[in-house]
Length: 366
Image 1 (cartoon, rainbow, N blue to C red):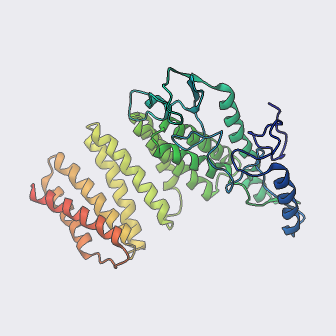
Image 2 (image 1 turned 45 degrees about the horizontal axis):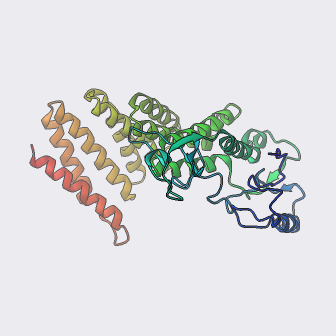
């Protein structure tokens, strides 16, 4: 296959034998599209420094759809690409024997044609093309450091293509939903590595630090699903470390931080380390209490506080401190009973009632 140089916009599936020039992924004519889109970009651009942010393979967030580079089972970019024998249809291989198994390893018949699968063989050439496609998105990644340094005549890129980080997270989430956990973990690891690299020249960038905290938390979820509790705890702790040093006015960041702390507490709890679990649950409770003090009208924050109170109380009961447990359950009930929700908050009301039901049952069991 010929190499793609620069931002030529060449589709990886394009063949010289394809007389029509129609891309099997986008369904568009390469020749007419290149001429038309380039002309429109020049006409619409009023800033001479404006450069369309083209993916080297010709894709952008609007045209990328399932195609030769995607697995039809998990609907994400191919990972550990393998082909069925004898039909040669290609999918992610996935893993067998545990909860995270995914894609072709779970089938006896080909999901596309129904042929019996006599064997599964790796396809390193197609996987190399997928990896090359992902690497290509690094070329449209903008440097925060270059922008902050006040570089003269710096190029301003149009947001035509999806930025690499958002693209990797999107693919990871698709794979995770389909239980292709190894694929999700791989994409998130690449995203985290990219952000760490940018942080080397922009350590105080709040957006980058918050993004890394979120991605690390997602990596923890992957490890937890794979049954790797120690690695999950490591990722959650690093996520909490990044997020705890950020401004607390962003409620989304506060929620992500508290969830990471709770997940560490859960893993410690299941491992039988109740004192450690209580410590993390209590830290999460403190984060959520502070958030409610600054945002008392946000109903979701009040429910989060009640949930944390219940977690701490449950551990207290298991540690033999029944009076502290009852006190915690009652405080959580008071928080939820005082909370008044409108008709447009049906999902929150359902969650409130669910937590209340749990709390009342806990008091009934004392």
